[in-house]
Length: 378
Image (tube, rainbow, N blue to C red; front, side):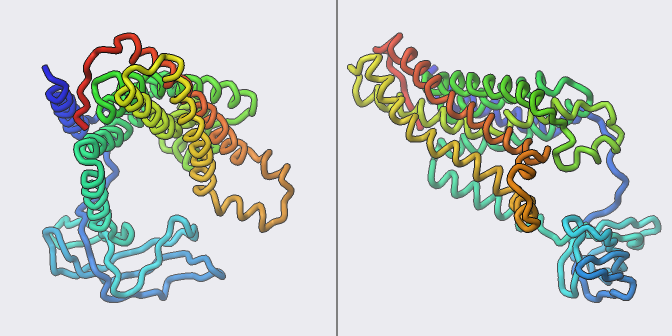
């Protein structure tokens, strides 16, 4: 079987697995009670029941909404929009807005309707389609395989990893199993079923295993618990009081940096592959030295990437500390900030380690059978 056929067969298998995961339901969590969901346009707003406390609004709005889709399209229904006083959760609507409406129809007439937020699903679908077209247009066949890997990763996390954690499976072992599966699929799908894909996978796994070990060690030394993550406490109150949140937090550390680790490993493996193609007679140690020179340059920016990614998602938290004039010691010693420091630094250890690991593995693979022909369909 040629390399191209192997690639097509591998992609077909991943596509079938995505389809199977879509219908998978291992958690068997009962669906929250609900009714019909559709788009609706607000034609009138009654704010007489809204209570305003400076910038915080509580109580509820009464909206008159014309249904734009669904079995009762064209009909009008009164919608209640509850306001809890939490700005990050509430939405305050105005006339003319399009929202997602959820309602019941016990006697065939829309009733008991509630607002579920400004309607964003159509724009999200457009954005996903634009992302897919851009990825395929720029990267071609490799972009198509990357898109397939992207879908597979999302399905594995949503349909497999999260439900397994809810069922009580050990977070660290489960997390390592899931990240191994994702790393294998992504590396071999994008890198190919060849020495480039194998060196990317092996280098990535060594970096992720190091990250897992360091995360578990320093989480214990930092005396952190999993409740530092948003919604963790709410999860306990949702019927899962026995979840090991601390282990889930540790698993989140190496899963969060796995993308950066694979990215760097793929860069190094592709470089080693190209060096060997352009210079078939290159020696083992010269091959390693050239790969390490590239690895040093890429590693320097990748560690900064993790810092900016994690810090950017907590801008307002850091601004609060600055606005209150608190000293840096207070800031760094706070548990939720210490958790992010652990995230950044431990993740960076994995990123730093993956470069030399991938260089050594790739060099050994390419020089073990230096004359072995290898197609590169991408």
